[in-house]
Amino acid sequence: MKLRPFLTTAIAVISIICMSSCTRNFTCRCVFTYSGVPGLPDSTYTEYTIKDSKAHAKSLCEGGSNVTDKNGVHTEENCSLF
Image (cartoon, rainbow, N blue to C red; front, side, top):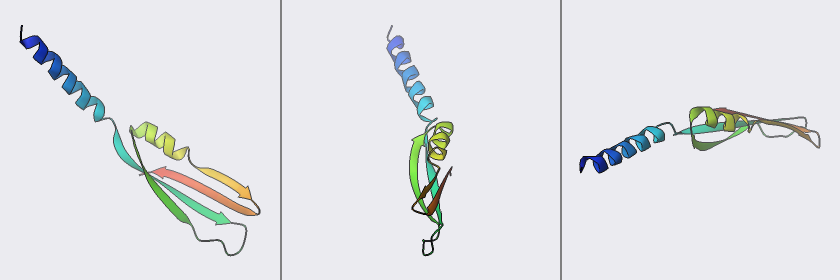
């Protein structure tokens, strides 16, 4: 009967290893492009890490893309997963 606790523990450990392998660290890069007014900076970018499954990380990252117009400045933020 000592085999049952060992099997339960082994199954739990294997399950944890399998589930944790689905999440990885991904880098999201957002490029900012400005236009509309003279003297604006060239394109800039920011990067940040997302620890999740690839599909969810891609959704989170690309969901950060945005276009705004304020005081004559047109800003585009394009985010993509690396």
